[in-house]
Image (cartoon, rainbow, N blue to C red):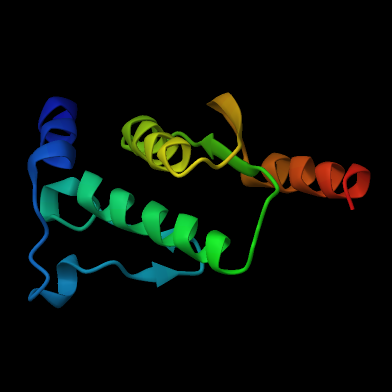
Length: 117
């Protein structure tokens, strides 16, 4: 895999909204894709994260948002993109800077909620 090309396309590729294959599509594991096919780009992550920020604001969410990354090749840049949007929207973000399995993020949320009802 050409990681430099993958990263370059993450930032430079602009998805075509007329192409159904390049639209945001969620499955049971979230939004999946690759910048090589224009299906996982910075534009996707910006839009998804902004939508999350707006949804939180619409129902008055005030608690922190927990953000972590996994071992996928684009996890690091997507994490940084998401963080920039969340901070720009004034959302408190709890970060894990290393690779973190989803169950540990879930546990952190449960522990937070147990101490901050």
